[in-house]
Image 1 (cartoon, rainbow, N blue to C red):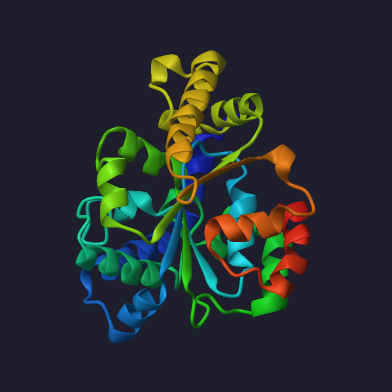
Image 2: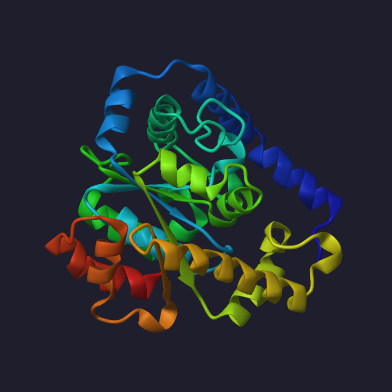
Length: 277
């Protein structure tokens, strides 16, 4: 049943102080000058992994694997806040903007909220419960691991929609930036389409008048076909995997494709993270 107007009003009143605080934090994030320690953290990040493809597509599991790695950090969503600002790496492909983006990302990693507002993945809805417990076993309350060298930014279909629109063109990005790897997790496309329809994420895939299973599934498959074309051209920068490939050897292949160290402790943790996610 739909909540009543009184219930909606009560929810808004309870959440208002938190939303006001988030609004003020967001303004500060994008207005204040970058600090020397944020720029230093940006310089330490030499590898950025960007997922492409639909939401509801094994991205929580993928984020968990990066979050549990000792030298990786995960920025969850936040594209709607980053796009169009001085932190937007898609608007300007020059090295100075890339450095500013990475420094801005380390700032956003110090807090966060669930949903598209994003921030550190530890604040996301998916990391409640088992995944957060796994993380805290290893890293306690640490939000930004010292010496992190890889950033995983989880907002896949927003990225792919920009590339497909030529904003920027993928060829231009690859020519200007050698620090990025693109991955595309592949869940059963029919399950992915159903999940996108049920959760409202269909609006990243199709217009409202096509928000039915058939058009959503078609768009899911088209997104994969688009990615696979790039993967055939440059398998060192593009990697897709299906849920059927998640076996005992998967974490080692994942590390190699994503340019992260196959840390022994992480390799031991990875099966638990996959199972929980």
